[in-house]
Image 1 (tube, rainbow, N blue to C red):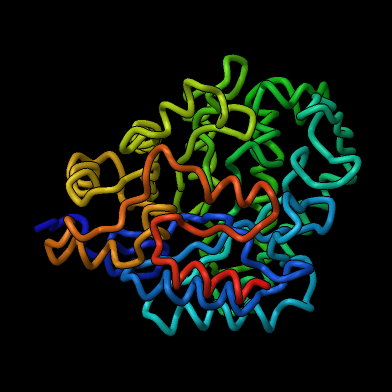
Image 2: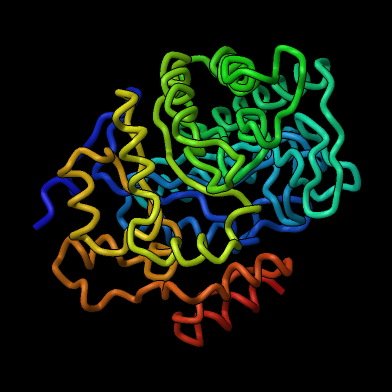
Length: 370
């Protein structure tokens, strides 16, 4: 029924069995201290069992606490968590999917009294401290060390989080990077630090695919726009990234009324992926409420993306890929566009659940978390 959607795709020496990936989605399932919990193992085992080709585990911090954006952010900044990460990779592999771990530094969005950033630009009432050149080198080294741990734990690839307005994106943005040294000003300077991180990670991890979560548009008047993110995408391709997972928006734009309305539309970020696809030859992942097989197939058939990233769509119904493939789309448990219960729970530091789930599933999740 959907020949493009369920066709294989080679990527960086690996074979993806279809064009479906699980996009990284923070749900607050890590244990205290950022450990891999039983709840997290169960969750990712279920996501891998869904039939997607690749599962991208969300937002593991390379620098705790300075780089952690939430209390239950997974940690990959020390060797202490390697056993848990290895169990996580094995759980995903055991259900037939490839495993990727996204690594991140939250920068000015970190939950610390004095967050770090490219420049001291006020963020939700807090003024971050500008990073020194020495600190930039240290953070690049922490990304590299984290990537080595991801490889050692048995994951198939690592993804650098350059989206959502986190640190790597903060450097590229003209809104948040107001430096006057060679890391600020022109696009060539603003993209310097993310490219140094890519180089450090590739040097440290060796023959190991490095993907990039890519912010194409901040959706803010003075923020990063496609006119500059397009050339940055080309620079990342030249730097050797394995794929670009395209997104739009930051925490400062997500709650604007016009963006809230935009995010309720099917495929609301697909145009950003299509724009990036015109700039590069590496595989491009499109995401953003791609809730029907027809829309997914259309994006692939038109060459607007190579892969699809499913986040809340897959979380709400882990049977989505099979129901689509088997022509049972009328049975899909849909993620309601006007519901944000899961995100409200996350912002309150609680584990997320979907109100569309059966009551017994929600009750079991709460018991396991508690």
